[in-house]
Image 1 (tube, rainbow, N blue to C red):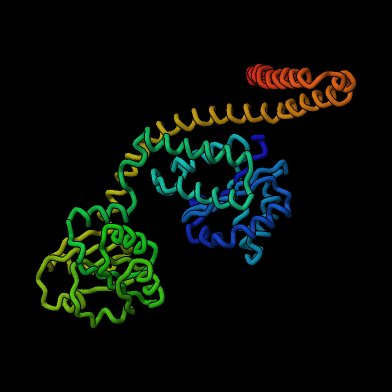
Image 2: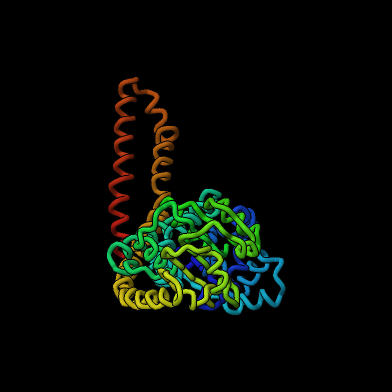
Length: 409
């Protein structure tokens, strides 16, 4: 059973995040795609997991899943990719089989295989992917056992170690610093940029009750999308030059190579306001000129400061990996027991059927004449005796046989 489990992985260890992003499949397109894959290759079970830094295909099949086979699957899924790109991905992918695949799954869900160690969101991401594929009958008995055991392992890791106790996400650290400043919920927040970092940050702010956002972006439609999700007003970045409505906080994260806000523009945004402002600059390179911070009354949260704290926390988290590995080792052993028990159950599930067949033959063929000669009460007693014997012959000997088989295994 275990030898039929295979994981095809494209992760941050082997690929740039931008390359991995090109392998992402929208949720609504995953099911028709993998139904065809499962049917075409006659796979028993299949599961697709996609996050910001990995794409994985989990396969349960007795087929030989080597790189040649993976290339065939890959070409079916990503038929629009050029042959050069297909070769690029297939040459650098990771392949895990059997107990190595289980080790990879447990490491993944415990986050020690993640780009950011200790980020527990991976549990939810794996569970949601599994539930989606289960709902459409693409998974079966093995992946049910493996994923459930992995999730329990992940929960144990996060509750029994300190792997996730120190924040390492730049957004989390910046949000905590902003929250410590106790800025009023009606604060005017200027948002520059509309990428995933801004989206994540605004999601946290919205949960706390902030909604007075004015979002500036070079692509107005992206700013519109942010406002649709989190509220506020959207504007083109060029409108920033003429913005006169004041602000309490500037949150910026763009891919610009030059400053978005220099001293001149910042003075125009202040429009004579002398109160203390909060500036959160999460861009690399910086969006906001450093001279603004030196010459104005500000609370400044920079990416450099946050990265130093993040790195220090990552070191602390890494020190916990030994404790995590001990839990993973125990979980792998216990999963092997689960597999052994399931193999025994599968091997023995014909026994109750066979006993019922023997009973039916005895009643309807071998002793039919004798039974027909019995009166109604005698037949009733005979049925009760046979029912009792059938139940005991199934439960007690099955239990004993299972114990013997497990012991010998």
